[in-house]
Length: 113
Length: 116
Image (cartoon, rainbow over all chains, first blue to last red; front, side):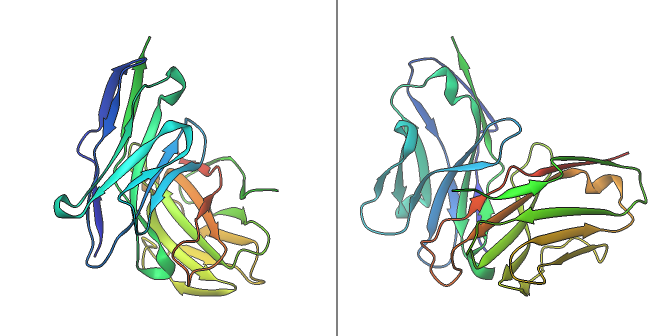
């Protein structure tokens, strides 16, 4: 069965600093990987996805992620964080019933002014 | 166009009450998923429909949970005899198709259920 681990429960960065959120996955086949963001009281918004091809994928809001098969990782990065990026971030792998998503536990990002 | 909508957005139920949570998927979307998100955790899969057929319900935590999508569009998640451990946000997502992995799942805002 697939699984996703997000090792960092909370991360605090200063506005303008760079950001990297870690994600490790376990999946038996070629993984389809996603990063979602959830603001308080909101649903999940897709930031980016990886299916195949270039291992560095670009997403919305200036985010990017790099797929590293050898490390079973799909880390999310942003060069310069804005205060509006404060939210909960979820990494997910797709597979199983109807291509359901299996999520990690999430990383809560706080941004210091 | 309109996204996935869910109602009610908030529901408070006394322990033992039955509740019904509604999901309106994006028009034309074949696949519909229900997820449960406990406080401070990631969403967890509950059940999946392709059109009106419930193809997987392996994630439903007990037989008190029941989901339906009788006409292949709107879906209802029903919880009978609610317990405190049912308190969570229930998320609905729809997708254009299940057969093609590249189709994104679009999420609704969720229903926050609190059982007192």
